[in-house]
Image (cartoon, rainbow, N blue to C red):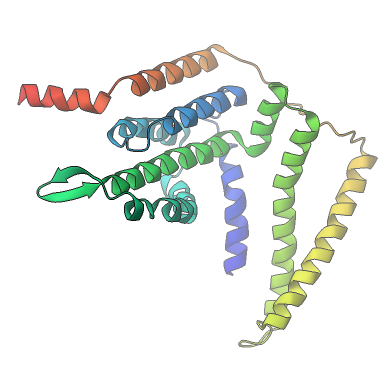
Length: 268
């Protein structure tokens, strides 16, 4: 069933975070700071910059290899949301027609260059964010934010939002299964049946949320979330963060691709 596959696919990203690799063993705060610095550095490039962004592909490639994350799974997630960036940048060639480059007689306008820059930035930032979740887990990221002094109420809301996505998906899967069992051919797939499913799903999720909340109160929930797993900076965290920040800074202030091109021209 398609909905079942979508449900289990939703939790697979969180399942990847429980692997035991050198990246997974790093402190969540280290990975969060490295990812944030990477995203800020990528976004700081001007709108017409393309070649300077290419060396930053090294960061996700290393994470894929060191953390043993399936590339195909992450790429599917990136392509799924890439339509938003596509529709944001596709209008640039329409409004920005000033010629910037000429390749073999073909004129490339500034709009196409800025569109390509937007797509590369989108790919780098979304891939790094997904890799952060796949190597840290969303609760781990929330614990890192808590260590940074973010208020507990904000952390609780983030965790509840994340967890209730799975609760909502589970209830929806039960409703869809019941409909499929009672349906023959195209029966049960009309708009009236769909609206009934949405109403039933809403009532069931509200009741389920109330039962979960009462169970949490009976177990002493006071608004703050705690974890039994200890976290602390180690030598590996310091080395990883130092190398990451240093390399990203050097790639930002120096034109690596241009330097390699000039070196190649001087050699050949």
